[in-house]
Image (cartoon, rainbow over all chains, first blue to last red):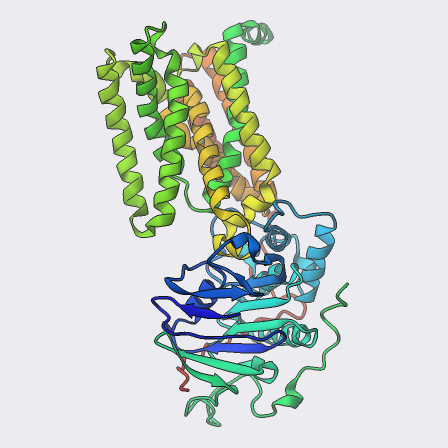
Length: 249
Length: 306
């Protein structure tokens, strides 16, 4: 994947290799979400190009292998509007290019995806009554049901309870072990630090760091700083939880 | 009572009216559900106002061509204008997000003013528009029935058949884009279906209340359902129920069918609101659930340096 430049982003040149786990970091307004969205063709690019699996996103959108891509957007007010069950939301992951209706076995696939995020027994409840973390997990299930080779997540940990954070870290670790490419917008590495290969830091639309995940800003890692996630015990912190992912195929 | 009911059903005029009312009642909430979900509940109103200009244009064309009656092209004119208006609103919505409600307002007022002006040019008065403003189900022709049936079939076929894709689109448009769904084409399709629905409903309830048959049944259904499919199904039932009942009432009492239907729908809303706690829809408001004990962690919003 190669990305050129948009007005919010300038001179951004980023390539993510197959199987890599990359964090996209930076402050508010640094262009992290815009980068992900322009990569998916949601935000138009003024000049430059964005390629997914070698296909130009700004060109013929038909040429992009959308079925291999999973997107988990930033969670915004899911509450209002028409009620929808978790199952219905996840099933919307099964439509896409050339697929206006989910095919056979859709229900099974959706329940499996919900099982993966630990919400299978709440499949028929309205997502409006879910907690922030649970809603985020439903959105992850909606992306996972596509069995993506590339998963893009926008701030998956923000506004999410600890249980959901840990569940997400387990899921993403498993996905990475299975060879899924991960591009994750993050405010802080937190639970996801152990699984990341690389971090890209954006500031005012430019890449200011591209390499190993950066150390926390001063004061952030002080002993009295209240953190509910473990610190410092990096590789051993990789959860050895039972296989939540199930076996692909 | 049974005799008068039989007499009502024997009247060809009432048969046509009831058929149209049922078709509108079933199909309008299908589109209404999508519009409510994407927070465009007032789109139907905007399209309705534009359709009024279409009515007048059809009238103008009809009298220019020397057709009798003058308004035989009114409904086709409304369909054309509504489709153009709907596509216009959709384009304005996607191109310039910020001025979306101003654009809608322009269409509202432009549509009404254009209609009144054009009907004057056609040699009529704004009184001729009253039937379209408040509905004129008593004057439906067999041609209207066929037109309604055709458009309702399109709306029902596409609205129900493509529900998974349309749900994805209306639930989260950016996600839909990222799945490769033909978002632009589907958006236009929803707008055109809304235009069809408006043109069809115009005969039953009139331009001023057209959005009500699309939206109020959905508002009722939302109160008692938890799924999208359930909401749509319930809204269709409520829509058909109030349209047929409302029209039947006006057979016995000299009331405006459109207004009766809408008031009935709102009464259903109030009833559902009252009955909701009794329906045993015990909401599990964030109830701790198995391993899902919630202890929300505050975010650390510290900016990271390179």
